[in-house]
Image (cartoon, rainbow, N blue to C red; front, side, top):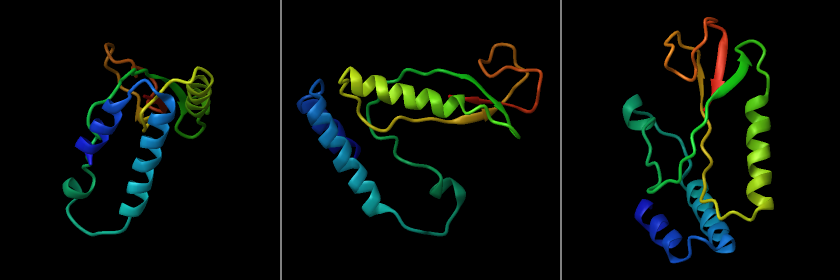
Length: 120
């Protein structure tokens, strides 16, 4: 799947309509691939990252574990609006993750509060 996706994107990587079609085909592939299985966690939780990726990584506070600020969802909504408004050919998916705080001062998720959460 990864090589096919990369090859399809490479045909016209700056054409928004082409990328939309590739994204739709990939979404349909994953929809048809869904299901249930039992096995070791490292076999089930691992996944194919989907080939080449265009990465712009950010990290920001997303509130407290008990009271999320919803800034993470607002960020993604604004990002999607920008992509659509500017007609940016953005290959899917947009990946978003969350993490607990760390006391490591070099980390963008550094916080003295153990209850703080961050979105990546």
